[in-house]
Image 1 (cartoon, rainbow, N blue to C red):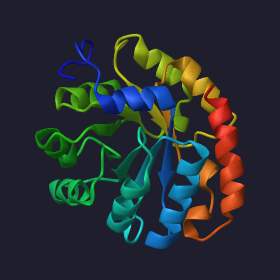
Image 2 (image 1 turned 120 degrees about the vertical axis):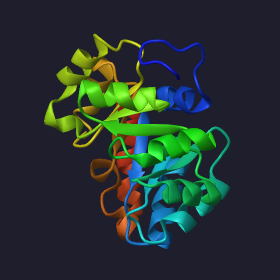
Image 3 (image 1 turned 90 degrees about the horizontal axis):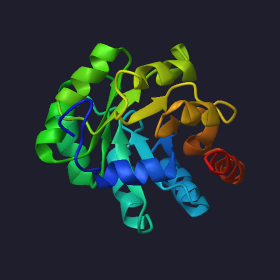
Image 4 (image 1 turned 45 degrees about the horizontal axis):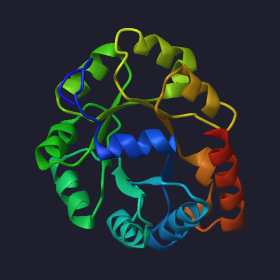
Length: 215
């Protein structure tokens, strides 16, 4: 996407994300627990998974989940901050990158051809992110202003793909989608402690509930 208001094509990343409507965010205690949580999510039908680089062994987890992911699912990296991070996650097989803000990794991902959802909060930040080439704008933290803010942002930027992230729980998810977000990124309310060795059966149950809420 080269403009904040127009786009001739939709990337595969945006197409899959908009179809899935849910981005699962894994922040865990290590490679093994993160992979176990990711595998459980994939097994329940979650199609887009982000492994945060704050997870020890995140690159190995990305590589393992990418190898295990079914056709049509995407595994990416979150908290991607630097040009070096972009190189590392691309080498691990990440299919997209997510940033918490408009940082140097946005341009680095664009130059590499790695789809990127750039973190932004204000209209100026959203505009800047897309001018840099970001495929989507991650509105973060979404809970600061709520679904009404997504709706307001879409008035001047009706064709921007907004992803609501931060404080989105099961009850709020349909509200953000109804307000115009193409998807919502959910960490703790979905993953809980499963990526740190917690109950995987409980994770599967939550995943089914969140998937139902996207329909």
